Image (cartoon, rainbow, N blue to C red; front, side):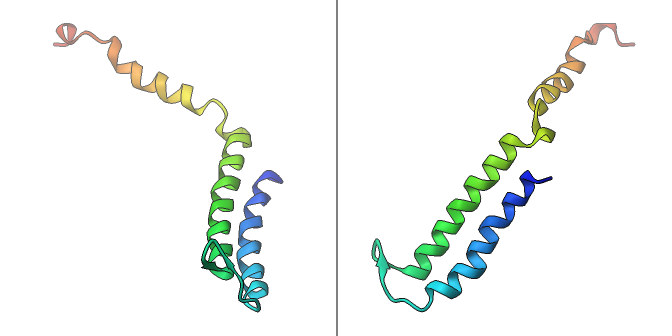
Amino acid sequence: MLLRLLALLPVCAILFGVNFFNQFAPTVFGLPLVLAWQIGCMLLTSLVMAIIYKLDPANQGSDQGSDQRSDQGSDQNPEQQP
């Protein structure tokens, strides 16, 4: 549960950072600072969600279960069916 609280980090960055950086007029890579901040927050969101997915115990071993389910029907021989 504590791991999922990391998802609040990008939300807080967007909500509070935009209001703070809207007072300045510099540019980053030719973009206004507010737009660069929002793009950075989108990248941060993707990174945080990937970290949460990799470290969340609910996602451990989920790939193995899908392989077993797809192989269940392959053991049957169609000639044996009436």
